[in-house]
Amino acid sequence: MTQLIAPKPSDHEVSPKDINDILAILQGKRAAPVTLTGTLTVSGAVSLTGPSVAITNLVRQAARVTHGSNQEVPNSTDTYVLLNSEDAALGCFDNDTIHDTGSNISRLTCKTAGTYLIQGNIHWSANAVGTRYLAIERGRTVVLAAVKQSACSAGNDRQCVSTIYTLAIGQYVELMARQDSGGSLDIIALGNASPVFSMVRLY
Image (cartoon, rainbow, N blue to C red; front, top):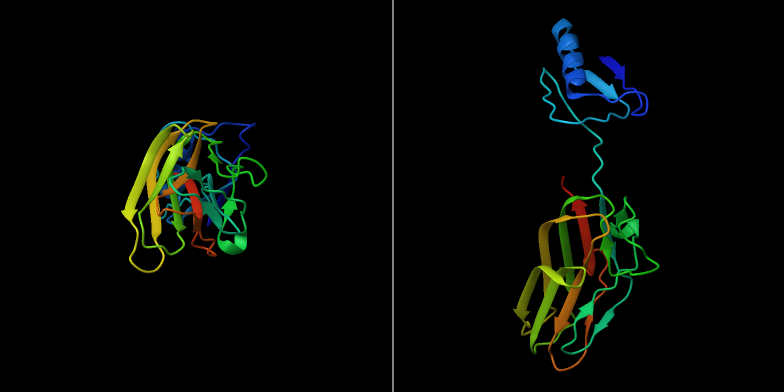
């Protein structure tokens, strides 16, 4: 296998033509795959062809966060879901400082502009009265997605909401929960399952 060490972006910006020329030359001499290592800065469209082309280790800006204890939701009150944990043992992470465990802990804030898959899920404490509502909001003014359901006759209500949305740097999203059972209910802290809020940049 032939290995090419890519120059640092500060030394040279690799263009689509550079990459295609390198691959065409080397693949014309041998059938073995070509491995490019290092950091490449590419602008424009790139077409990679040959007997073996693989792109690995692409970083997607993302975060998945949760909360370590139950959160009370008063009757008929819009309540933003608190998220104080990025514990890897619970499948959580943050690779772009999207979340802050010290302040504004309900928010996921865009640090890299792009289009994101955003998803949240919660488990409610058992109660058979009223309805349950869960929404993804941007900036506490724009509802991006929402679900509403009547309470289960037995057991815990579980809700999941998701959307794909383009965010600019500094815009933030939150999970907003509401219920009208006639009294307070809890969002249950349940290991890897509840509450969970995540977003990952698609492109």
